[in-house]
Amino acid sequence: MPDHLTTPATDPGRALESTPGPVSPALTSAPVVAHVVRGGFVESVHHGLAVVTHPDGSVDFEVGDSSGPVFPRSSAKPIQALAMVRRGLDTEGALLALACSSHSGEDFHVEAARAILDRAGLSEADLQNTPDHPYDEVARTAWIAAGLPKQSIVQNCSGKHASMLATCVLNGWDTTTYRDPGHPLQAAIAETVAELAGTQPLALAVDGCGAPIHAVPLVGLARSFGRLAGATGGAEARVAAAMREYPEYVGGTRRDVTTLIRHVPGLIAKDGAEAVYAVGLPDGRGVAVKIADGSSRARSVVLAAVLRRAGIMDEVALAALEHEPVLGHGQPVGAVVAVGI
Image (tube, rainbow, N blue to C red; front, side):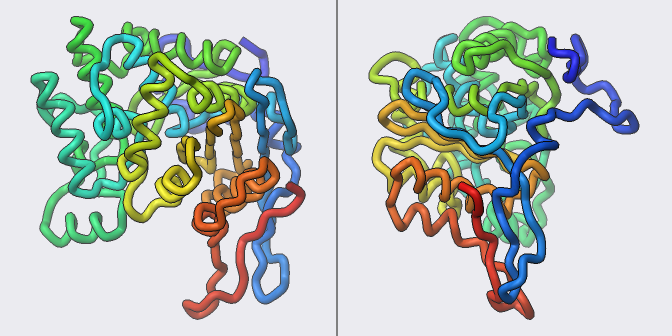
C-alpha cells in the first residue's frame, strides 16, 4: 500500500469525517481542463485529468498525471458486472446492462431490477443499496407526486445490487453480508478490478450505494474499459454487448451516456460520481476523465474534447456531451468549455 494512501483493512466505513485524508498529488497538480465562461468572461476554472490508452494498455496521450489513483465510483460497475458474470451470473441483454448501470429510475429500469430479484427467488427487501428517489427528473417528480417514499428499488444502483444478490444465490454465498469487503463476492470483484486495471487496488472505501469501491490509477480505469470494449469473446464481450444493445438501461432516456453509446458504434461508456467518466472504444482503446474538484458540469465537456482528439467525431453524441450552458436570468449567457486538450 503506497504511503500516500490509506485503506481501512476491515471496515471501510469507519468514521473519518473529521480527519483530513491524504491527497493524491495527481489531483493537486492537475492542469486546468475547463473554463466556465459568462458573457465572455472566465468566471471559474476546473482542473482535471484525462488519458487515452492503446489496445495494449499503454498510454496514447494524457492530460495531467494519469498514474494517480482515483475512485471510479459508478464507472466501475461494468467491471464489477464482469466479476459477477465470471462467477456465474446468467443474465443477458437488458438485465445485464442494468447490472452495469446507474439507471434513472424510470419504470422499465425498476421492472428490470425486480426481474433480476425474482429470477433469483429474492425480493426488494433483500436489497441493501441506499434508498432514494428516482434519478431522472420526470420519474422523480411523478414518484414524489404519488406520495411514494425513497426506496432501494428505484435508487440508481439497484440493478448492480440485485445482480450482486443473484450472483450470491447462484454460488450459495450469504446474501445478508454481500456488501462486506471480505465476502466472496467482493473478493471476486477486487480480483477482477486488479486484473483489468493492471494493478492492485490502491484504496478501499464505501461507495454512495453502500457497496465497496476500489481506487485505481486513472490509466488503469481507461485500460479496463479498453479491454471490455475490445473483447471478441468470453465474459468481457458479453458485458460489452449488453451495454451496446441496451444503452437506455445503462443510463436512461434523457442521459448523455445513453446517447453516447447509442450513436458511436462499438463504444461503451459509464459515468460516475465525483466527475469520473470512462469509455471503451471497439478497437481496444480506453478513455478516462476525472475532474479534480468533482464537478459534474465539466466532466462530459472535457470527455467530448478527449474523444475528438481520439478521432471520435459523431456530432450527435458529442453535442450531448458538450452542451453545458451557463445561465443568466434563466437564459444561456455562456458555457462550460474544455481547454488544453
